[in-house]
Image 1 (cartoon, rainbow, N blue to C red):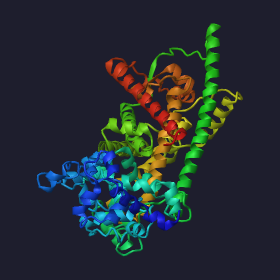
Image 2: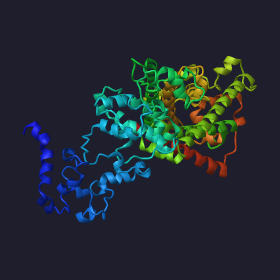
Image 3: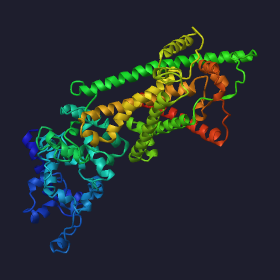
Length: 617
């Protein structure tokens, strides 16, 4: 059919309907349109009405109260408000829940041209034209990247309805409310998380991913958008302009003011922060890339060495246990120790107290930090809810960090006391530092490692140790590295305005990577390697309680630390460390319950971490 004929078809159809009252009578219409147009033809354009979406309707389809023409012409029946809901039920239901209805804006407030309205065909320019009738463009939407694209006919670009809907327009509410803060980011993700749309319009493909990997994005994903910055806080809601535009909120000249809305007293240095920095992008963010690669290398190498060590020990330990069981079945023990159950003190009460501080702070930091690290996981949201939300988690995290600094400072003081003040230790500074009572690594540790490896492969006897084993020394020294890496970066992230006054903003990107990966290393190491070395190895399973009461039996002492026992015997000081067996409600119930609970929590967190890596969100 010719194109002209197609365009005239609605008009011809309408004229046909007007000239065929019998057709309307057959449809049950009270009055045919031809009669109505006899009086109202000067106000209603027949051609425009014919081409409108209502062109196939008779007049009384909407004006249902007009059933008696005579009474209507006498003025006895007035034309009432049209009830659009009779046909547009879905739209009316959405409108009923909108802020428009609450403000008294009815259908005709937007659709005033009801007799000539045509289908919008998803042309967003028509939406914009209607909205600006009431919402004057004082916020500069039409000059924004979105507005310009819409006016240019790009139907991918965001128009009013993309963020606020067509009919179900919600009240944004209080600027600090959860609903408002969530809205600031949620509507942006509708488009910017659409990979096809982003690629089609040549937009940055990592905007959403980089935001979600930031502290702001993690809190948003966990359900606490009111505590962090959303997309609109930095880019504004309507006047979104490219960074090179002097009017843009993210233009270099305006960043201090933009960041200063949340970060008071921030500086020009602080604005050097990479808001969408990607550690995988070596070309644009080389500092972040090499920091991430270095931390990844540290994680992989540490876990590779110690997990292999753990696996070999586990297998060899099971074999040794079977050997002991077989020996007992034959009526003798492999290691006969006289008065083997007699107790000796290994740790002083101050050491037990500091270790309890370590346990409390470490579990507190893990419980509050891991949900943020794995914010894309369902269990992270549940755990954060149990804690009481992001604000509570942040408060607890800082309290536990304070405990960490306390026991680290105590360890420094104990080290100073050990090296410079203790009178019961012989020798000068270096003899003390590298002596058998010191936690500083020495040449003996190399021999111990070699002997342990030979035992793993059935090439030699199980070695006996001095006061400290090589893995215990590693744990102790790891605290110093951890305090530098986790503690230093944690302080930076907790006090951004202070450190931002003299450090460039990208230093916080680096601190985020270090803090996150070092925390992952620490938790993974403690909950797997350390737990095995102390509690999970076949010789100690299910738990070694020496750290809770500071005592161990003579049998354990001789079998595990035979060289230390031999030295004490040679010096004649073994009985100096003799102790009475701990008992009572404090040790037998409270401390043991605490110990088992701590191990259970750690193992559960380790399982959740493994699940997160296997099933990324």
